[in-house]
Image (cartoon, helix red, strand yellow):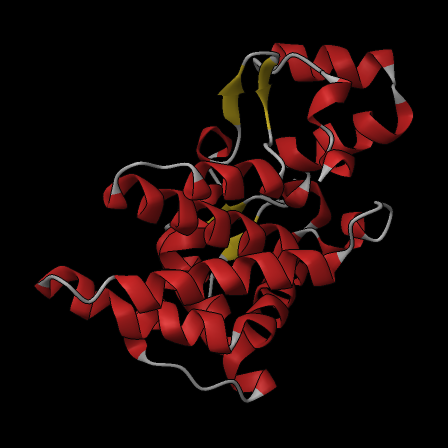
Length: 208
């Protein structure tokens, strides 16, 4: 088990090890069954998105979190199958992560968690239906199918994982950004700029 410093930071373990333990414990507690490859996918997703540069994107208005509708448009308008698949995976991954780790913030928005579940589950479902043409695709299809079919249980698993992390550690840039969107605080705006993110009301998820 990882130890914690007084500041709440996890020590004595890697992020992957921490999330492997936390996801496993949450799945056992909630009696959610999944293939080992799907569990590994969930762990990798969490490890990937704790680096906020992997969650936020460069846009015309600065760095921010793109609405799911924009990610869906990327998939619809992609001319090449590989680009469409990448867009669908991004949509599914972002929807799952936000719905699992930040469901409380969605309660304050015009678009609620049901929208994230519908969009994310659909994205994974489309991936499962269209990836069977290569050996790699055949290996990934069962993972995406299970993610689609059990999207809501996996959201709950990620929600329990988020609750195991100290409040101070959970205040990632995403939470800071969400708080600024709701308050317009100049102090929070300055903190975002110090982290390399230009506050921009146009990137709020209310525009989904």
